[in-house]
Structures are given as structure tokens and as C-alpha cells.
Image (tube, rainbow, N blue to C red; front, side, top):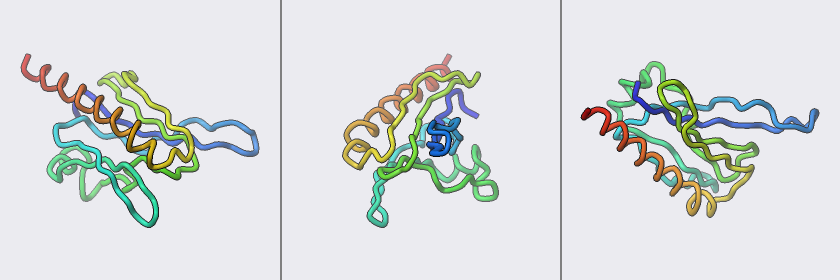
Length: 133
């Protein structure tokens, strides 16, 4: 796997205990050159979907035989907090963004997507420079 990993967690609210549960990992993808984020409108819902080339999915994720669930995005109407984090090879969190419940499409487009794109480019560049050394 690559030197850096993108992870998305969901943090659900427990109404009985009146507190947030521990984060649950939704998916983890290596930061490879082909990883990107796309705007998707689907059934009156908007989300930012992570995508990568088929060859990279096959190499790193075992696609199609071991493909993780297709829930590979950040959603405008999510009823949970969504956490995007970038990790190094030791699983240390390098950068993290916590998105409150039901952020709306405007926030995803104007705040979240630029943040993700900035850090994707940053960690891709570092990985590329490390490969050259």
C-alpha cells in the first residue's frame, strides 16, 4: 500500500446515552495518483464521491472480488458526523476534518471539497518526491 492513506469514518449519535459513539471506519484507500473526488447528484441527494482508476482498485482494494461497500463518499444529508483523515504508514493522523451532521451541498462544495483536494495534492506530491529519492 502507499505511503499515505485516506480514511473516512462515521460517528453516530447514541440518543439513549446522549453522546457520540466511537468512530467507525467506512473505508480506507491509499493515496495513489489516480485517486480523485467527484461531485455526484443522485436521488435528490448530493455527495462527494472518492474514485480511482480500475487498475488501482484492483491492485490496492482487490476489486472486483474484495471491493469494499460502495459507500465511498461524504454526504450532504448524513445523520452522523463524517470524519476525513489522512494517515501515514504508521497510521498516524496527519490531517483531519470533522464534518457535522447534515452539512448541506453548499458546504461540501465550497469548504469540504477544496480541503480534500488540497491535502490529496499535498500527499500525492510528497509520495512522488519520496519515490524519487
